[in-house]
Image (tube, rainbow, N blue to C red; front, top):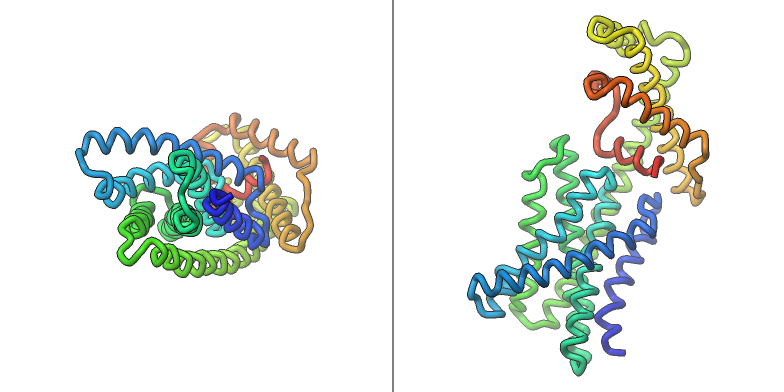
Length: 331
């Protein structure tokens, strides 16, 4: 029963983060999949650390303070990078949830292994491992995800440089916890005092950013769709830009470009509408007509090709948030 103290806190904290997600940006099945990914990373970390410890020749305490934090945060961070590149992460809220889920999966495997190795460990040990080590793993990866996504939003692109500050902070937090400068219990209390306010700040900031993005994006998409459907597109800057493409593409391809622009805008509006309904407590399923539009859009992508998509980028909202909303709608 004492082992449950090492397993339940991190899962309870993750459940609280999901509850606080008012827009329901993250589905439970996605969180479970990411927890499993974190568990798989823990297995890879065990093998990697075993090899690194032998290769470095460091004694266990020094290794856990200076090497393990780097290798473990790197492996956990790679899961977040993969999610961002696949457009699964759009806002700081889902970055925090997915980051904590990766760390939770890692911590669960680590604590289960520790339970197997030391079945007679006392309550104090499991308090440290459950409320300290496990929360630290989840919180460090959540901070990496939140800071990385915030820098991507500022830079407008995702590169290694955007992730480095968050990685450095995650490693520093991990290493500081493993040092136990005061005592294991004091380090655990420190983690519980520092991480929840930081994640609460991320949630608050993301809620405001999401509301602003929905308002601005909804207006911009509505205006674009009205221009296309009213026949006044040719008089607008967008229409004039499309006119310049006639010299670069054949007539049928230009027509497909316009169809793609219309479909993309319709789906973007639909996604924003679903988010607003979720915030009000309504779950809106994706209907068959929307799925057919996605199938048509994929066909048009093949028709206009990569060059055509690049030509459309000045007219399309294609930030990581915009690409994320299409993933959310089409999954």
